[in-house]
Image 1: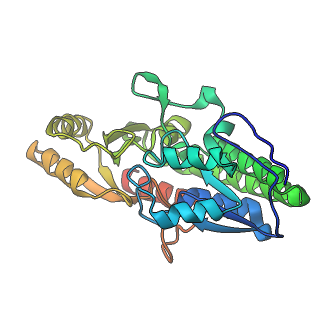
Image 2 (image 1 turned 90 degrees about the horizontal axis):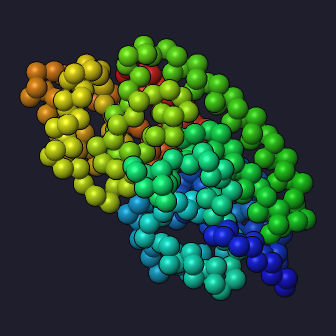
Image 3 (image 1 turned 180 degrees about the vertical axis):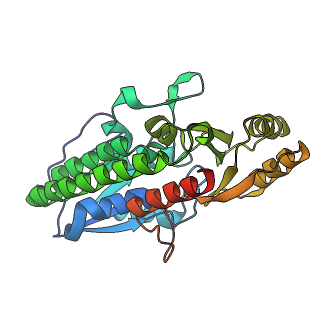
Length: 297
């Protein structure tokens, strides 16, 4: 077995011994991406199911065993899987093939968390151009781990890139349906800054980038004042975050003499479940956009 070590949190070794790569991906987004790029040459297990919050996820002993036995492990990085860092380091140290999406992202396009330039927002999948970078990273690393199928991974990447370009156009066309003064997206936690930057929406979240800290009374009151002043039509709950904070925000707005609707549920840190119509990344982003536009236009 030849082992090739690469610096950074991404490692790649040519260690494949069967005709199918067994991949373990942390989030539903990355499991979907791995299946799209890998096609018939991979078998993918996802650790986190639909509606699971990766910020709070703690790996079980079975999860660790699954990753140890995999040919490839794929994770987001940027502290998204905040409670699993030591596990990824351990896998790397033992020579496992570990793909960290963070390594392939253009650093000048990453958004800082508040005023700390050393900590970046991990929700990169909501900017389609960054998801294209993620797709290329997976294709490149799979090709290194499994060079006999490199052409297939390259072909799958090319086809998926075209789909992502169509998705980007769809988003822009739909967002243009919202009056400019209503292009404000208010959600339970700060997961949509990349989306807002790329597609021209002002984004406010009750909680910060991570859901590991709850919103306080002052946060709710400040945002309620903002909504009342701007007469924002709707706010949104998230599939992976309990709705109580948004419901509290809605009540606070009402106490100030203005009614704001809950515009629907957005998929933030996971894809939709079975029969949701949002089972893939492409479908999830479209579903989010349709929900946002339907509530704000």
